[in-house]
Image (spheres, rainbow, N blue to C red):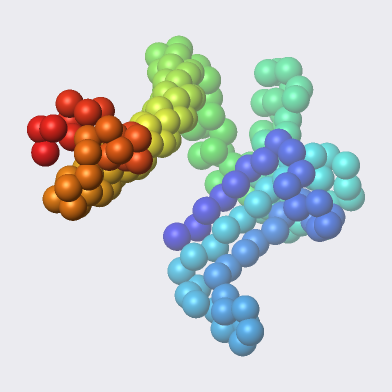
Length: 180
C-alpha cells in the first residue's frame, strides 16, 4: 500500500524537504516491518519556496500540483511536462476529464460537503453519547445508593428499631420503610 498525502501546508516543521517518505519500523532495532507500506508526504509550500532537488518525475508532479497559470499557458506547461515524463499526459487527460465534466465536479463538491456534514454529525453524536453515559452512571450510582439504603433499612427494621429512626439514617421515607 502506498499512501500519498498532498498537503497545502507544511506538516513536518523540522524537515526542509518537500517530499518525505515513511515506513513502519521497530523503534529499537530499526527493523522495517514490511516493504509493502509507504507513506509519502508532498508539502507543496516547501516546493514553492525552495530550490528543488527532486527527480524529474517527482518534480513534474509537484509542478503540476502547484500550477496557478491560466488555461492557455497550462497547455504549454503540460506539453513540456509530458516530454519529461510521459505519464503526465495521462494525468493531464484525467484532470481535464474531471474539471471538464460538470457532473463529476458537482458530484465531488457534493461528496465533500456530505463528508464534512457527516463528520460534524458524528461529533455531535459522540457528545450525545458521552452525555448519555454520564447520565447513565449518575442513575446507576443513585440506584445503588437507594438499594444500599433499602438493605440497611431492612437490617435495622429486623433489629426492632422504629421507622422514624430508620428514615432519619437512611433517607428513605417512613412509607417506604413500612413496606419493607
